[in-house]
Structures are given as C-alpha cells and as structure tokens.
Image (tube, rainbow, N blue to C red):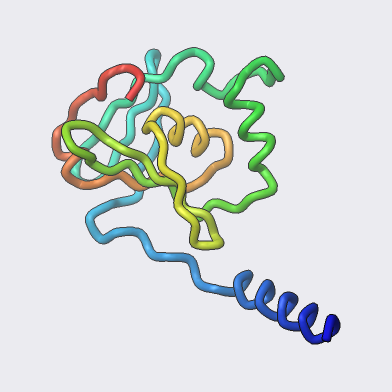
Length: 139
C-alpha cells in the first residue's frame, strides 16, 4: 500500500511541475523599470507610473540587516513568472505570480523591490499607467 501511495504522490508532484503558468491579465502590460532618485519609474506603452521606494527597498550593497535582501535570498530558489501592479479600491495592490500558479499579494513597493532583485518581469495595469502619476510613499 505504501509504495502505491508514494508513486501517486511523486506522480502528482511531477504533474504540478509541468503545469503551464497562468497568463497575465489582458489589462496589464509588461513595463520597463527605471530607477529614479526617489524610487522607480515603470514605463509602458500606455504611460508610466512612479513608485517611491525607501532606501532599504532599493537593491544595493548586500546586508543581512536589510529585510528585502534577506527575503530575496530566501525566495531565490523559487521561480516567479511575473509581478503585477493592479488597481485596488482607491489605491493599488501587487500580486507575485509563481511558476507553480500561486499568487501572493502585497504592497506595490514590496513587489517592485522583489522584481528588482530577482529580475522577474513586471506588469502594470494599463489604467494605472495612463494616469502618469506617482503613487504615495508606502503604497
């Protein structure tokens, strides 16, 4: 009985590894990330969006005291398919999509910091790019 269960579990794990990644929403577009003095400028065909980042959120000299470097090192073994910045109520929300199909939500600045460190493609909702605005600090 145990060998059959082990075979089923191994088979299920192999199937999950080869599932296709979920496609990005058609309302988002891949953007270029340009660092500015106060944050990043996300530039797409529909416009641009500026997201302020704290000094700790900018990638730089590695420090185990820097929370973002610590998290990036932890998740380096994971594979991310994309990061999406989306409108949510009167603000924004960010989703990190993994290759395994999981989605984890967070603050836009957190997700952009992760995308900068891991080289993950960043997609932004076209309505946010069309605003050509700067998000408030800490969003």
